[in-house]
Length: 155
Image (tube, rainbow, N blue to C red):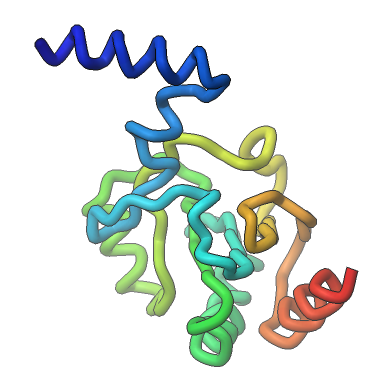
């Protein structure tokens, strides 16, 4: 019965021009297991920062990202993504060790950008509809991120 339902939903989705996976699978999950879709940003800007423990500039910018999160967390979502493939336990330990005070993505199902970055740290900014509007290379500050988003909002 389940297989028949999935087949029928798949056919309906194809007929309507949609991919079924956008309704059944989350785009990403965070450490607490909560699932999100990139497109369900609830009208908020989203900042996604790639980091790694072996990346010195990544570790240097973490206090700035924490500051950004505390200043703008109600209006701008901030997520961290480990460049390295780590288990949930390893990610949780890394979050505690480096006092990452914003949300860490544990599983990426899809990316709104083409591929993982080629250098670190890299930060993607997504508009309230979930579309990538810019990619930033190198260390970021809370002030710089806010200024860039304010400039993008005026466009």
